[in-house]
Image (tube, rainbow, N blue to C red):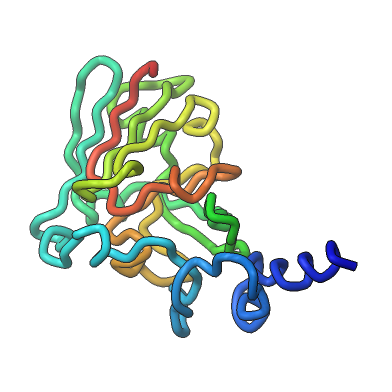
Length: 195
């Protein structure tokens, strides 16, 4: 009976909308995000992370992509949007115990960005760095098999609309079967190397 009660009061954390409010004894992942394409849970807002709209503007933001041989390419958001775009339906699963349903992400495959920086063939690992200035997860390392997965994206849009600032605008990483902390938001640099 106790197990059933615990299950009933925590299971809602894995669903969006009304069922999330039934998870009385579990983390919810923050306030209800409202409605629209970005209406799914987040753990950390841009404000909390110290990210401003000015530094993520089209004029200010550039993504630095560096390959194993040291070649660096700098890309604007417009440059990224001009590259082949791919879609993947993936959830965000937070290490705090909550998750979202699948979201429809669109962006550039990580393996295509590795190739753009000179790493043709099997891509190496990647170190992802955020504009976020502090915190344990402003940098995340992804393994080569994660980079090679065709669903692993540098996402520019979600659910048919561009990312919101709180969801990582101008670009964020989304990787299958990785905890939310490795799905880095506000990406500033990708360094492809053997870690």
